[in-house]
Every structure is written in C-alpha cells, then in structure tokens.
Amino acid sequence: MARIDITDIEMARSRIAGRVLRTPLVPAGPLSRELGVEVALKPEFLQETGSFKLRGATNAMLSLDAATRARGVVTASSGNHGPALACAANRLGVSSTICLSEMVPENKIANVRANGGTPRVEGRDYAESLDICMGLVRDQGMHLVHPFDDPMVASGAGTIGLELAEDGEGLDCVLVPLSGGGLLAGIATAVKARASGIRVIGVSMERGASMLASLQAGKPVDVQELETVADALGGNIGLDNQWTFETVRDLVDDCVSVSEDQIMDAMRLLFRAQGLMVEGAGAVGIAALMSGAVQTKGRAACVLSGRNIAPETFLDILSTQEGSA
Image (cartoon, rainbow, N blue to C red; front, side, top):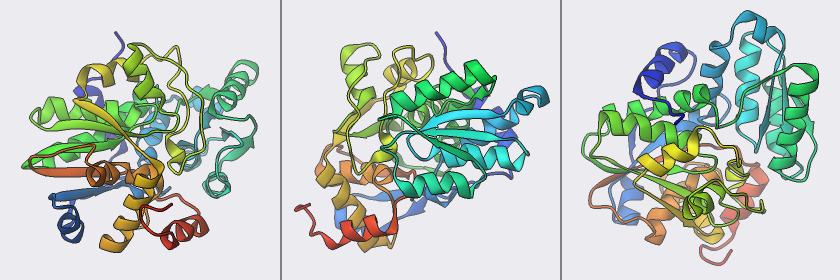
C-alpha cells in the first residue's frame, strides 16, 4: 500500500524551511465565546499565495532534479494548488503550466498569472482539466505535480500536522478541510505519529464531496462536480488514487460534511468575531463546529486553509443575513 510516513514529513519540513511560513496556532477568544467551544486557528491563508498549498508545491519542486525541472511542470487545479505551484516553480526559474476548468473563479486564475504561471483554462470541470494536463505530460514531456495524490505534495502538507502536534497541547481534535485528501492525509500521518490522542476530522462541503462518497463506497468513486462556495474543495479523488484514499480511510477519525449556508455562516462569523477574510473551503471546520456536525470535549484546532475569494464575492456573502443565504 502506498503511504507516506513521518520520516517523509520530517524530511519535507527540513526541505521547505525558510521558504514557507511556520504558521502559529492562534487562540480565538471572541470566536470561542460565540461557539461555546475553545477554538484555536491555524492561519494557513498567511502563506504567500494565500493557501496551505505552497507547502506541498515547494516540497515537490525542491525534490526534482535539474533535468526534470528543465522539462517544465504542469498540474490541474481547482484553484489554490495552481498559484502555489506557479510560485514554487518561478522561484527556481522553472516554467509552469496550470490547467484550470471553467468552474475556477477568475480571481484564482489571476493568482496563477501573478505568481509566474501560465494558466490554461479548458474543460467543464476538474476532471476535464486533469485530462488536458495529462495530455501535456504525454505529448510535451512536462512533469506532473499532482495537486494532492503525490507523496511530495502530501508530505509538504503534512508539515502542518507536525506544527499542530508541537503547538497543540491539550487539543481534543483538529478539523481539516477535505477535498482530494492531500492535506488531511498529511496532517493525519503527522498527528497520529506525534500526538496520537488528538482526533483528526475531515470536513467537506455537501455538494460534490468525492472523498466522502469514496469512503462510504469503500473505494474511490467519481461524483459530479457542483458549484459550491467552497470551490477549492471541488473535483474527484481519481479512480486510480494511489496515496490519499487509503491513508484517509485508515488514519482519520471521522469525516463530516456541511451545507452551503453553514459554510457562509462560518465565513461571516470568522469575519465578525476575528476580523478574518477566509474563503469557503477554509471555513468548513468552523462550520462543522457551528452546526454541531462535530462535537468536541476540549479545545479544537481549525485549519484555515485559504483566503482566495474575490473581494466582491466575500462582500456579497457578508451582506446576506446568517442562515438565509
């Protein structure tokens, strides 16, 4: 069975040190009082490209030899891995092509350009953009850096788990946004190796949650990708998933889902209580606590995975009354 281990994650931490932020675990007093639960926040939106994805992309790029880098790198992205790979590649003088579907918001396409990547917008959904990406690998010899089902990407994301284990004394649980499972698999691997008493819980949106459907089926399955405020969590895990499905299945304590209204309520609460602008995918952990989808007996840590939402979209969500979106 293909699986990363704690040694891979420790090596990733050494490799990316000084190139990504070691984010703090921040007590959230106002938010905790609102929720009636002690909450600490892991602000991964502070990374240079606005999401945790810079960790995995940087680890993957630094793992490539010169000949592979010279071929250029390519990926498919639902929005946040693309800018991160573009940034990590650009720092090393490597060309990057980022395949994005028509469902990816324009601000995330612009983020690819701003970080030195070449966006290629084709395909109705993530699956079609991945097909285009694989065509470039086949026909032009580019190197694929998969957004989640890649050991270097998952190991880089797992460095968050090391930090949580070191900083999270007294934690009952960690709530992690769940899409393809790279972030969740990496964090679960690190936390279970270093602080096994902490529960690790994945949180997805209800609309188009491929990993949840796969876990329920007992094998990777495809679902229809749907429009969602948590757009960064869109896309299937892949029927040929090699790394993330089995790790999530075997190590994660629970996986839950939250509705669109619950996600938007969480975004509003994060802004009102803590002054934080967080995209839908980054707010799902708070949504799970607000909705009661996750019950905790002690302090909960929420990974705020990204901030990459268009300002006008965020303002529209803020202007809508909670619970009536």
